Length: 218
Image (cartoon, rainbow, N blue to C red; front, side, top):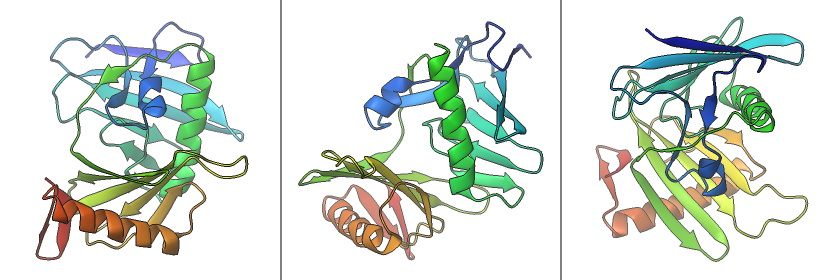
């Protein structure tokens, strides 16, 4: 397997963390390592230090391969970005929270951007988008060994100086109930009301399906 490495940004391997995904609210861009044009999975790593601790950001990618993903690896945990959109989706080892993992992940992506090591690649994913006033809501559905889950994103198109533009939440059981704040400043109770409204719109427009209490994007 062709493995490229960067150690604190010193070597030439490029971690592609599509800024297009951030600028376009993560609708189509993927966060991947560059140099992965063949059908075989390619792996590259970026080592960095955050608050005195060592971490590795590992990207596994091949176009169209469902096994493509990003892993954030710490001394006692592993968290994954399943669809490589810049958002941590699951903690597969250790006791770190998703929000803590996201904070470290965001830091590494910011470092890579400053070093000019970011490329972009389009990667489609199932998503329902609902706009209301100056808010943009989106639901993405994922599958895992422990069952399906949803990622709910709220984007404030006109954020104030002291408010977050993007807030992300996790519905672990895809049952319509938000369980965790991944990032952002919206309280869970308020986000739940937004989620309920977005689900209602999605079901009404047949963009979401509800079966046996599970709500998923079609």
